[in-house]
Length: 355
Image (tube, rainbow, N blue to C red; front, side, top):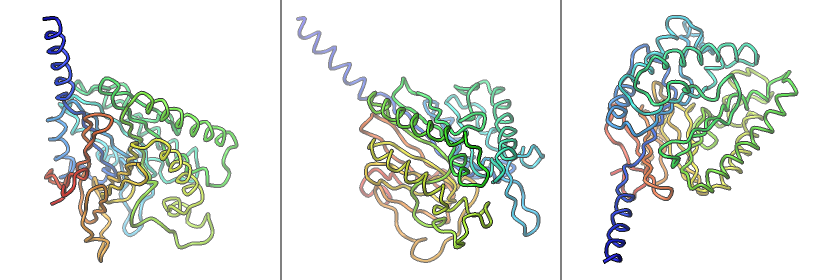
């Protein structure tokens, strides 16, 4: 009789684990263009309300400063009415949401500034604005820790979620890229060295614990398409443009270091924005997601624009949208891509999932 009871208990326990609701991580970037929630944010809001056991990450360029005529603005949040509204359009969709919310910085949040102190000033204004407003939110799970990394540091800053099954690691890629500017304080290179050591240690620990790991940032380390080359030879010519290109010296150095590190931990996710497109690629066991079409698009034409998405390989242009990753276990996740209107575009983890 005891054996029967034990068998039933074990069977029920295994069944309960197998049926455990999945945890969802929603990923959206470059959502700072609209003064009111646009179609992407409205659709994301519906998904968030329907899935409280989840987290959402806004992956930089959280507020764009309006351009002046034909002159583009390099700045982001500067506390003017329009930049406040750009942030509030994202904070507004957190009303009623019961999951966790995280914002990470991008180049516009640093004002694209080659002056570290000036850029940090703009970033700190935005950080304060986001944190003060989200502390008023009565439903989110983490009102006291929403803008990461904090204080203009590169991170890594990580949080454990879903009973420690999921770890989100926030890093500031603009901080790392800005090491390629002139007149960099020597102590920042010591901080960079510690950053890579700490990130490697975090990934090693999380892997040993069987966690599903998401490293989230603004700049991609793998992408298919634009922002590959810069076209100018001098490394400091039109700095604010060139730092966005993958062959800018400090950007390339960051790519090489992060890529080598991620490949030591197969199964890790690296999610970013910056490129105003939707991409998903699995390279050497690493999941690379680009979700940078929260409010802006790169309009593309030709073969690159019509290449069909397939399992573990997608390069979608000319459409806004966002990603969702469903975590069932360490060995089972599904990557879902959504159109701007909330229609499911693809399950990129299944053969034929984009039909």
